[in-house]
Image (cartoon, rainbow, N blue to C red; front, top):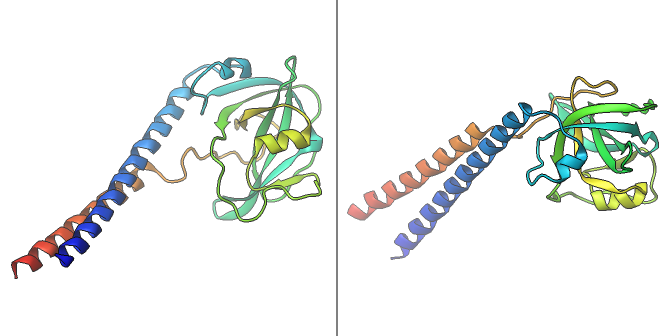
Length: 218
């Protein structure tokens, strides 16, 4: 009976891991399909985006000017094995007074060359629903610009910048000027890898079941 309980628990854990990886596979597939679908759609304004239920990957077109004095650097971002950062600049929208954080891309060292005058930007909407796990604080006092952070905490940044921030940010499209390396990853792990992991855990469960049945016959 004790042996049965051990094998039963082990098989249950392995099957649970397989099911979890399978759910991740479907989740990543849905994200990639949503991105592909959105790339075929016309770009819309931020006001139109706010009326939509699904905002991720929506193509945006906005006009306004950069608030260069509030440049934000998202640390510990890698590009082809190189350590660097994403440089984010607030963008004040013309007419509405709304402010949108624009991720201008990856670079190894900050480029604080100011971008002046009215700009029209194209890019993709990026939602920020989950607070990631980090070590230490995200924003350290006293505030110094450019501001180094580990992730975009919209409520905290809104208080520091003094402008109402949109809950989404804009990932700048490669064809826009005044950007850096923009090889945006839609998913960090491809769906096929999650499917492979799901099959792997399922095989382990079958092996454990086979070992139990073999020993039971002895």
